[in-house]
Length: 199
Length: 199
Length: 199
Image (cartoon, rainbow over all chains, first blue to last red; front, side):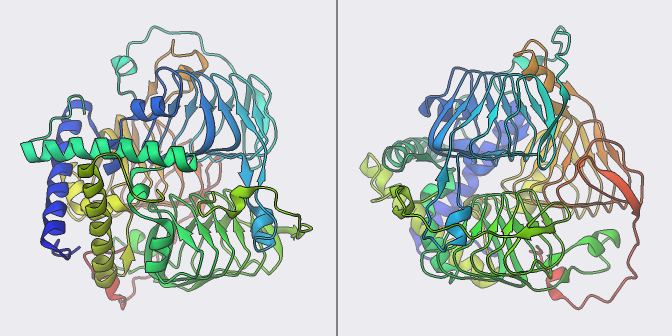
């Protein structure tokens, strides 16, 4: 907008109020938490959204995450912005996972629908992700896949086949490259890790 | 926000109203359609946005899709969230396509602009995507590319060259790996396929 | 929503006002700039957001970009939608860069945190991106990486190691493939390049 002048006086007023509200929210949140959020995340609390979806204690999910159908998520899992969780074919995710920004997890696809111009419907299959899994940024998990506990999936991967428990895997298509080394547990010096607003 | 207290009383009131409105919309939409949307998608109807852009009958496009310049899209095409359709150099997309979440289709790039610190402008070239094309999640299509009808492009691909009609292609850079098998048409048992709110 | 009827009359009214406001903003912005934005971008000015973050003159950043911690950005840099800039470990980005849509730049990771079910905290390391760098769409830059001046990083890359000045690099993991050719500077015929609202 060049001049901020939508059609009616009421709309014009609401527009100005929202612009001012954004400035106030940006300033307050940046001052308190050191972060600047997309507009929707100022109104949608990540933990409240997770609770309303029936996810476990301590799990959070950004406003820009699109959630379709029946998705079950355990405790203390972090679900980032710009994600898609498709539970239309049944999706389960465990405890203490990181579902990084840009990750998309599917339980349907529309390839047959597209190729037949809608004569075939979408195909659906359940997907399962265990506990303590790290899914790197922009990773895509196809319908029907099972990922075991304690797996690390590298960024930009496309997971088309099952990944066994404790695997380190990456690539498009995603392949197992080794076993995960569980790090020796260190004292946490970083207070941000205990904050109610961890990244 | 820790305490939900922006600057002025009017802003504070509007903030609370929007938080309550989100809760009402989330509950209603989840109850009726089994989905939880990013905030913007509660206010922006996917079909209305497509109509306003002049796209064909039955085509839908999520609120988070950024549309630049002149984009022509046919009928019954699904355009997902977190996408970019850049028509600044002229973009055409056919009927019955799936433009999956995270897909970006370009008709310009700014490589020369960046390398010359703005002395060279953006470069533009028209891009065309045929009908019945499936573009997998997070696929990027560069300026000047033509993708024929009935193609399946795998997730996480980067399409730099033309893809002939009926091709199965994937990778970064994207290469043709075979021909598409059009599935034998099956009776659609899944009522979701007929819903006005398909995934 | 099928009928646009949230719980209370006030909420119902606010809902209708916002839907009408979106229509007015969409029409006006499309008419003036030839673009249709995600809802948040009508309220959050890209240059104003950059100024509030202390970024340099002429730098812009879309509403859907999530900014965490301390991020320093120079002048005339373009930061696209659906991006993540994580400065929790200290992030610097130079002048005249293109941080394309879907790019994520990190200074922490939570792999150890996930694998130990929270007993280990996040790990942090500073990341630096020079001036005149083009980061292609959906590229992910890991914590601790330094990218020199004048680099071109291809789309869908995962940058795990330092990239020297003047490099052309791509892939997952990202590797140097050659040197950047700085294009001979051409007269800019494209007026869009001088617009206050360039893509």
